[in-house]
Length: 241
Ligand code: GLP
Image (cartoon, rainbow, N blue to C red; front, side, top):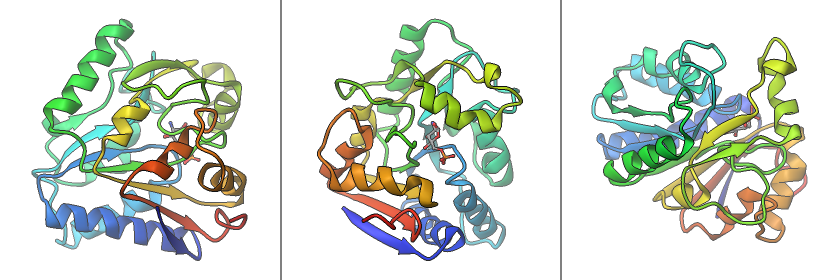
């Protein structure tokens, strides 16, 4: 595991964007695993800037997002599809046929999860997976559990995740209770994994996940075992390690 230190969110976003940019430059047909949440927003802004400067070409890039809320249609401004369109896809020359996100409108969980896992396999796997981290150590929407789920599956969100994510919704009652997410196995199969974490709120879980024992109760802790895992974090998030 590598740790890249940044003094603040701006520096973290630039450093993490540079890692993604070098992946795109070295392999223009890369499969990128993408993440939502507030942490990667600065990184996406930076990638858009590099694209506008003529330094990046997304035309052959393929993507697979980590997760999506169940029950939100893509036009809902809290769906992860909407987030990706606003923050990245509508601002770069990506081919939308190459974009993959679980379909939150498909109520048949088994069919949807199988479809998504197969879609990732048919891309030939993920070259670089971007991650954030939830306050309880979740990655994607893999919540603390008694095992590490292998494949894309449906999850019941924990109260702490609903509470943390309510800031994006007009009312807590509007936060979906379930999500589709890549499994821990899906994530761990990525060739390279980059996590972004910022702010002092994340400091305790960063310590627990990366200095503590590997346990499904702290899903991110499994990343200690990945052969090419990089944590890009600011001083505040790293303040307890
Ligand atoms: C959500 C997403 C995660 C993300 C997490 C942290 O639950 N499913 O992929 O890492 O939030 O979000 P933030 O970056 O806003 O702290």
